[in-house]
Length: 111
Image (tube, rainbow, N blue to C red; front, side, top):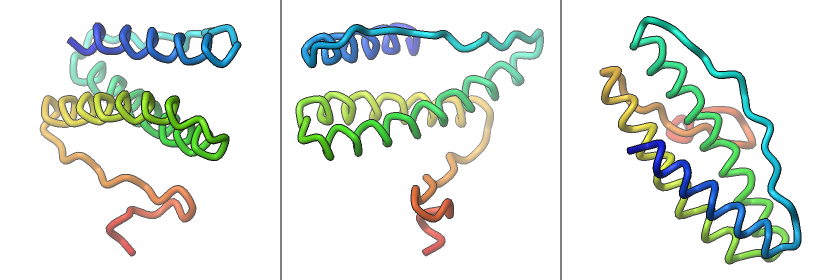
């Protein structure tokens, strides 16, 4: 299920890049392998957390440039990415951590 959503994310982003006159390019990260399913879930969770952080940054950048359609597309995608994070936390039996405040690095609820 997540893989299909990730493909749709890539298509949506590629369309936005094309609309803005760019050319999508991808440098894939190394794939983590393990015989331990828990380790694979943990690696996937870490990747989702990094991805959510990158989407947050891209949303801020798009809005700063006045590209609100792009921002809207990214906002819709980040909702699904956060759902992936929730699903992985549930599978691992852990709580979803609070997001970090991008300016201070502390948890949002800590303020």
